[in-house]
Amino acid sequence: MESSYELKQIEAKARREKAARGTLIYIFLTIWALLVLFPFYWMILTSLKSYGAYNSEYVPTFFTLSPTLENYREVFTAVPLGQYLLNTLIFTVITTAAMLVVTVLAAYAFARIEFFGRDVLFMIFLALMMIPNEMVIITNFVTITNLNMRNSFQGLILPSITSVFYIYLLRENFAQVPEELYLAAKVDGTSDFRYLWKVMVPICKPTIVTITILKVIECWNSYVWPRLITDDSAYFLVSNGIQELRENGMGRENIPAMMAAVVVISVPLIILFLIFRKKIMAGVSRGGTKG
Image 1 (cartoon, rainbow, N blue to C red):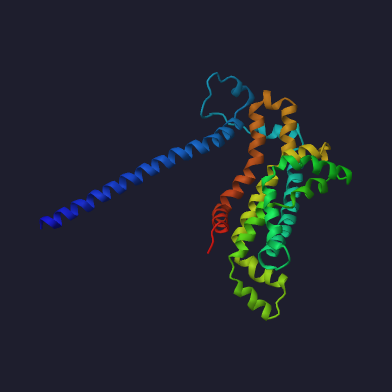
Image 2 (tube, rainbow, N blue to C red; image 1 turned 60 degrees about the vertical axis):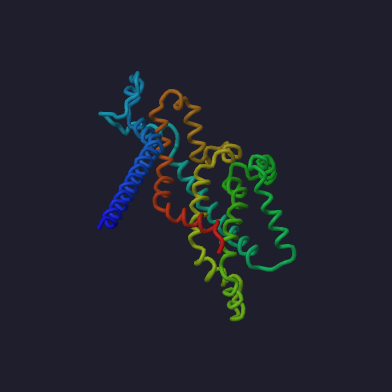
């Protein structure tokens, strides 16, 4: 009896300790979530304040009793933000689609097709990851200028359709697919392209979805290259629009309107991430796991 009582006491103590640890973890995660989400809350809150109300606050307030959408109307009239959003959508869709074609074919070639010097070429290819993108901007600028592609979607898109990291990530994922499937497909007379489309792509879909979403985010947030290669507002992206708003004085004087513009630009990416967050995590973890 005494031994049974002591065992129950030990189990009760273990449950209390486990509950205490769980409570501390939830408290920590809640505080961390509040710290991470606060900038987004502050951005949205500021965008809903009127210009006069914002400037009359000697001490910033964490709420507003009179929200307004006037700032959103102002940013669409101050600059053609709707046109910039459309340009960004076109740029993002075409660039992502072209990048997927290049990445899938290159990753498949490095993973499955045997050719002379494949491994050496892949190592040289990986070495390109050590070169910062900023170092090739001048070369790309000169090339695009010589091809007379400045102020065009071609000039915006072409330097962005390849990514060493995405090819490496997908190649590692392709390499995890058992080679026996490939050999069996070749025995049946299946072409490499058909095997890629019918077998490899469905199996590695999580990683491909991850690459697609990451590329969409990268294109949507692109700033340096669009700023450098375009000076015609007909080809401006949302990053150019934000800069134009700042140059017009809105970023220094009308902070609420500037925050409204940032909200408009950020919301599509936030929604995209929230919808596909599980696929992103699954794809990245799978791409980095062997076996």
